[in-house]
Amino acid sequence: MPDSIVIIPTYNEKENIERMIRKVFSLPYDFHILVIDDGSPDGTQDIIRGLQAEFPENLFMETRAGKQGLGTAYIHGFRWSIARQYEYIFEMDADFSHNPDDLFKLREACIEGADAAIGSRYINGVNVVNWPMSRVLMSYFASVYVRFITGINIQDATAGFMCYKRKVLETVQLDKIKFVGYAFQIEMKYTTIKHGFKLVEVPIIFTDRTAGTSKMSTRIFREAFWGVIQMRINAIFRKYPEG
View: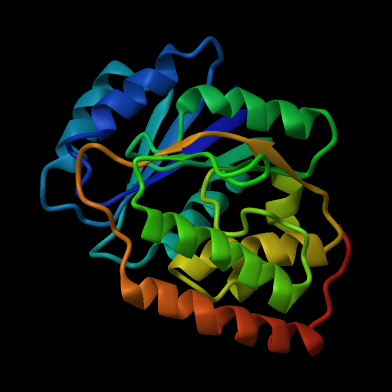
C-alpha cells in the first residue's frame, strides 16, 4: 500500500478539482488523494465520483453536510488517514495555489528527518504570485505577529501546504485543536512544536487561484488575531507530552 495521502478540502471547486486530481495522479509517485467536501452545491462531488470510477484504488471522498470549516475538514481527514496507516499525510488546496510538484519536496524533508514539513512562502524572501500587495502584507505580518506572541520560529505560520508524519498526528490530541479557520494552521504548527516535534520550512512559490472563488474573509482573520493570544494563554495551563 502507498505510504502517502494528500488531503484536499473542497467547497465549490468544480473549476479546479478534476485538473488537480489528474495532476497529482500524473506525478511519478503513487500518492493517494482524500477529498473532504462540505456539501458543495456546484457539482464538485459529482465530478469526484466520476473520477473515482477511473481511479478506484487511489481516490477517496468523504462528504459532510454544509460548510464546517477548514480545520474540522483536515481533522476529519487526519483521523481517516491515521486509521488506514498512511505514513505521510499532506494538506493541500484544490485551487493550484500549491504546486503538486512540491509534494516531493515536503515528503523528502520528512524522510530526511523532519517530523513535519511546511511549504513556506516566506523562508526565502516573499514568494507569492498574483496576490495584491495588501494581502501579501497581511499574510506576511500575520506570521510576524504569531512569532511575537508565541515565540515559535516559523516564518510562514499560516501556511496551508503541509506534510505530517503519522506519529505527529497520533500524538497531538486532535480533539484539543479548537480553531476551524485561518487560525487552525497556526494552532497545528504551534502544538506540533510544543510536543517536541521538528518542523522544517521548505521554500515554495505560492500562486493565487485563477479559477473559482477564494474562501478568505475578515472573520477568518479576526479568529486568527484573537485566537493566537488565546492559544498562548491556554498553553500556560496545558501539558504537551513529547512525541
